[in-house]
Image (tube, rainbow, N blue to C red; front, side, top):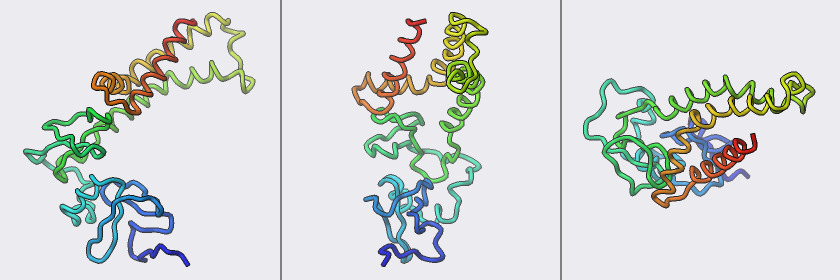
Length: 208
């Protein structure tokens, strides 16, 4: 018998797992994550931060109001990290410990994800350089080799020129957070990305 009882009228519980009503993330049935019972129904969350937000105003999230942009920001909002509860800042930014974007602690203060907008913009512009870079560097593996046409030396320089805006501009936020983690000695995933990508890029520049 299935041990997970799924209410037929719930969009937050399903046979595949649970949906965090605050951030919308998927939570597996067997994941040891926070949960809260409200009006006779259990709601499951990806972290304690989302659980605390939901507990303060469940109807705000269940009604979908948190997805609608507020007409005017709420004054006096504090910005906290969803992963590091000890972080409490007066202005938006990134967490000095894990590097994640800070979120307002007042529901409806700022529903626009500026980090996602910036990353999406950088990703789309980087495609202009990434597509020809992939064709030039990986084309020979599928029988589309342009290097005999351009010459080995010119191909190397072309790959380097195409990679520079991708690494140094599109990847700039990653390096900024990675360097900040090294300065504060709070090593995290941004540290690994900075060291890995930075080392590979420097090595490639020297090789060319």
